[in-house]
Image 1 (cartoon, helix red, strand yellow):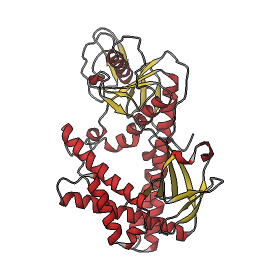
Image 2 (cartoon, one colour):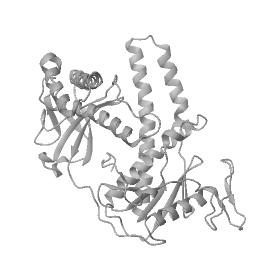
Image 3 (tube, rainbow, N blue to C red):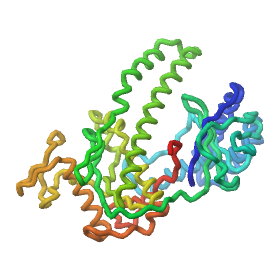
Length: 403
């Protein structure tokens, strides 16, 4: 499944209709969550029946396409199923109890409620929300895909406008020649990552650079009267700054991940728990600014696309162990050079990257050689070291709008 995104151009009345459709989808989702909370043993079929009852009871819900209502029910049940799954796995800490949404930004249609024009440059929404025809602005060509391949259509509201996403069922794989190379990556705050060959990539720190602009826009918001139109405009301008920073971080992670995957046949990296790392309040802002999760996400995505092997290993003591002799050399975070009693001296992160690569190769059952995992060109390539290729971590099948 790939995702193609276009900017939606329309009139102000059409944008208002999109907002109404998003609010209706949020209403149905929240009603489904409330019904699940109030009744025991509720399944997905019960929620589908609830959707039909809500459409009969509320006229504004009936104006939304029935498939969009079903998609909202599926979103609610997805949150419920994830909560049950986390409880069964015994994940420590919060289990992700389903919450009510108060600021949804998208509505999803299935195979009905919309129609593409013959030129595939416009899309018309045919339900009772009166969204009408929207122009699609983008570089993708939907003519490459059959109409039946489009399984879902999303309308998304962002700070800089409205977007239409097409979820297309299609193969997203590229045949590449093997390079015969394997690499280990150690991500950090000083450098974005250091690989097992000693190459470092600088940390761009997009949020830190944009912090001054964010403070300026935040002050503008606080000076406006609550509920006024000027305050809404100021909030929108603040949101645009945040959106720009998030896009910069995403594009940076995507670009690096693509280069790393294309240059190597095997890529190893740490299986970091970002949620636990950001509990350190002294480093939380810098960790979030680095965008390690986005980088891993794109590594796994491009690993699937180009048929490469990506391995996530448990990174415990990779910075402490000597990559030359295996001895443990304890050091604090401020110590940036690894100095071992065996006489081996190396940058701390470089030493960790070598250890990460060794762990990955030992996980695959070979030292210095490897065979591609049977799922390397499928839906999952990232593997936890302790699972020995049995517990797979699913990769994200999503197509970016920038390439």
